[in-house]
Length: 389
Image (cartoon, rainbow, N blue to C red; front, side, top):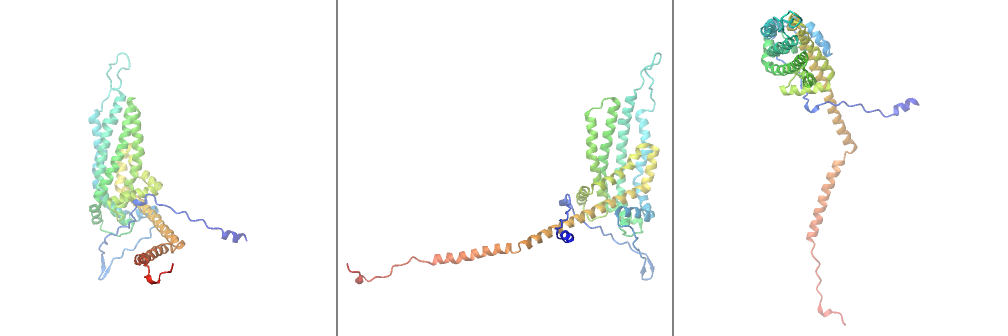
């Protein structure tokens, strides 16, 4: 009895998920790449390229591709290394040279310490403030310029990463890399320029605050500059991360990738935030010192860049799949609602149309009859047959 009662209870309607910023979303497909000519093994037979058994889960797949396609992607990253040479020149040599050029390298901090010692020494606060603002700030600007220059090579690298991730087999690494460079270099240049400028504003605001704190003149403006640049800058940096994963992978224009990136961030904020923090870690490690910066550069240039590119591609792929499922669910729900409304009142429109047509058909004959009717005429009466008085 209890079981029957439970079965008779109405089922709760399933909660329908809504796609945030659905009006910006473009349900695009993965780009279909031209197939590379296969090597002829025997007359009439070509070399087979079987798909590898990579996991379906996105980030596990990225890790599996990193291990399975390591040799191929490592060779592709060597071409990307060409575009990063200005970065290592600035970090390894010019930064120290510029510091000695600006500050001179000789300081006298022993002035005015007691009787018999000549005064006129250097101020520690002034020297540190100059180090922050006159040395580090220009060096950071130079490094930002080298990163923008290096972003030119990301088009070819992401193209190789995309083909490895989706198993669009290729063996001509040089041809494949420069093919991707020719297709996407300007997209990555524009996107990374925006990202670098936002990051530079965040770094300069911190240097300015540190300079003001060293001099003891830090005011509300210095603190507000840091707060506002980080509050607005950190979320903005997630947009280039998603866009870079979309460019080479999906059939989207530049502005289509921008809009889809906003949709993915709005619907997958935690995933995008984790990947963004993970991606920013190498740049933060470069602040540890010159030698450590060179080590980080070598690791990132040879291995880390295509490793991050794989995870950025996985982020974009996972976001597009999730948004696609929610979008399709919304479309199905709208179709079901329309069918349900039609079933509840299937003849509503037909009745309304019939009533209108009947009214028009009834009105026309009546109107015509009224027009045909004539006033009644009195019949002729013979005057001889008048009534007698």
